[in-house]
Length: 139
Image (cartoon, rainbow, N blue to C red; front, side):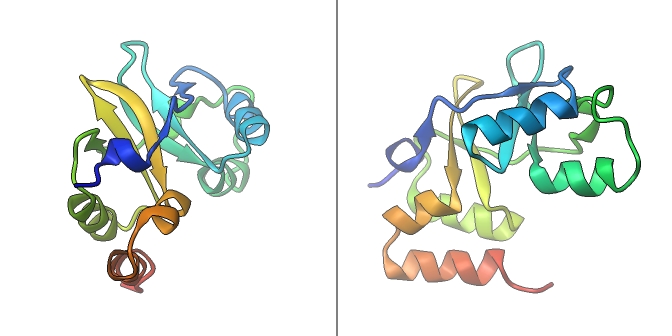
């Protein structure tokens, strides 16, 4: 059985909920990623911020990126999977939630991230087709 732990990128770097969007953009640039998990002062996952979030919800709205925090853009409930979650469940959840990145949790701590690139490398044709159909489907 293939699990989240088997395909995730371990050691995901969090942006703190109190850090600025400028910090988030620089971290994304330096890490070569388009999204960062947002971790609270309690070291728990509070959300995910994407480069698109910064552009649409901050830049386009005229917000000051140096004073607006990552936590201000975190909205609602964040989806995640446990490290021992089976591949079928991961694909189903990412499809249902229409997300391209999924945080992986173990013992209430963030231990990794699964991206669409990780899925492309590890999924068989059937799983990959299901993922693409659900995540990229127009609703």
